[in-house]
Length: 490
Image 1 (spheres, rainbow, N blue to C red):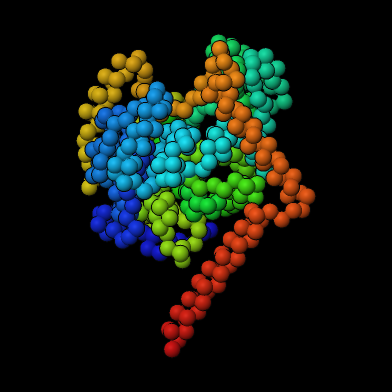
Image 2 (image 1 turned 90 degrees about the horizontal axis):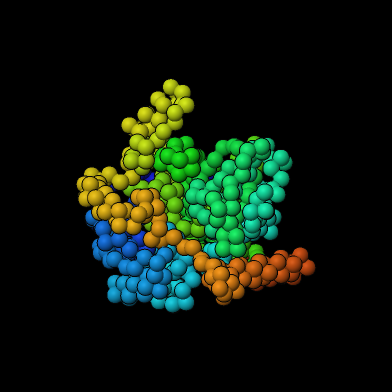
């Protein structure tokens, strides 16, 4: 297990305790989600100055003392060019040094060719980003890297769905849109049960699906910060409490050596094929016996960052401000009582429902609900909680105007959905994205082939150099320890 950070007991001190340089001006790309308010507070605790842009005029971050300033910008889903222009304007006006993506705005920003944005954006290249997001391409990439994947099938038409070999899979298949997110649009296909219709799926050239083996086992969610293909921070929690069987609302850190090693191995293998990764990286794992399988990936902020709430350590990893003596990757620190980090989304925990849960399961849920800190409520930053009635009123007004349900409203503004043009299929945005992914895959295959031919690539040299640097750091650490022992003996 990675060693603990010096002074890893959690601090509730204010922003002024962490104002040592560098003090960065940081922009978050939306302010409406729990991860946005928590990330803003962590950055503020680490002494940074936080700014937010969001398509909504009023959002939870707008009322936080952790946010220096907020600005309404066009919704990227409806006006991508307007959103990019708005982000650029604020980045220049506010003298932003780092842009941290929160949700799917990351795709709009990474795709743009504006250096004012790209030079500040903490994200991997666009061609790698979309392959990690696309469910089918993700499995192709993992398999190409030589790692385990579930059995999967690409479905372009309704006939592809109807011809799936369901009888081969004990627990059936999970059918999900290639460019989907969370559990939206997911269908559990089981042998002998009716299949969803083509109209229900809305399947076609404009919307491909992937059918992946439905695996039953222990589920985990990871969140990592990676810089120059080096994993600098990783948090991990088992899926214990959800509101829909998928979306977690309770988070408890758990160190799992196999998963921590898997993430570092994945990033290392990416580097070997020429894909240098810098950004946020989150995985959903299923563990079956000794088998570890990735079933989904989110290359952006996710709920795993809650494990660092009330501390500056993740913020230091995001801003490259960790001490050189820190052993990597860092893990979420323990609580003051020596327990593993654990937090909850209180509103989500109240919506928890299991009609067939036993008394023991209910009792455990109530124990967690009553004994765990809420992400939103903070004594020294109480306005985001106090403002909830006002915000909900505004949100429901927007729901009536748009005809959307509240969960859909929250997502709709910032969803990245490349469009397919039936009049000009080859010139459509979706087709351009598919060509970009195909070109990236071909490049990967050539690099893998060159490696097998025994050629020493530049990436191999860089990897050996990094190993040498790491060993030098280890020796320096050992020398410091020996010097301390010598001083004590003297």
